[in-house]
Length: 213
Image 1: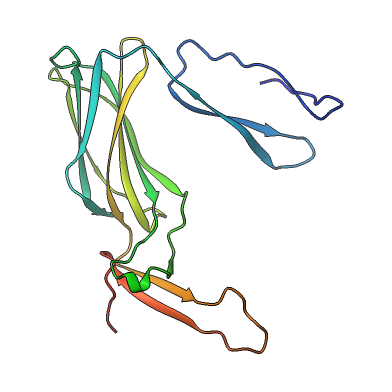
Image 2: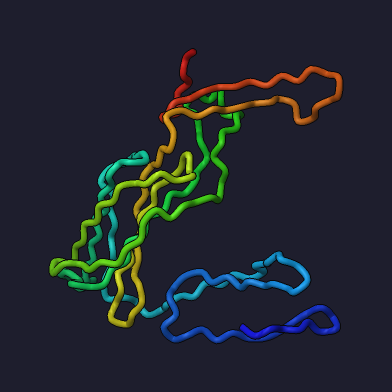
């Protein structure tokens, strides 16, 4: 987009035309200025396609929980709403590991904080392939080492239709990046100089159970 200049009231009004073949999804507007290295994203819009696709996509992961180094298989299927396969279509497979909060199975430790910050994710795989004549695709990957310690393994299967747009579906499983997790709890919200503060620690396994010793 071109450079913009704010009005005397510190505002700006304008328009942005999307392309007729723009991909469906969220679009963020980014602002930058010559007086700082910071960037802002004041606006996010959703571009939707209200023309229904002639087929639907399903995605299934073979398994419920995985670690780094594990092999994972994702099955993608495209079927016409009228019946029958949507054959030989270009397909994009993407895999992400997304952080989720660690929840101990023992409720006594529900107030403990664990190192699993919300909002972080890592893309670990993306590739474009084609469905077979039956409208099916099986994709296998090995999960690489990454920075996420706990969360969800999310696969997106995106099948391109005859207009060049993608019809998508997702499947997810639990991702376990460590064999154990350390939690810390500090009961007081205010610490006072000269007064002893007490902190508690706990170690849990990948299933949320406390580990002895």
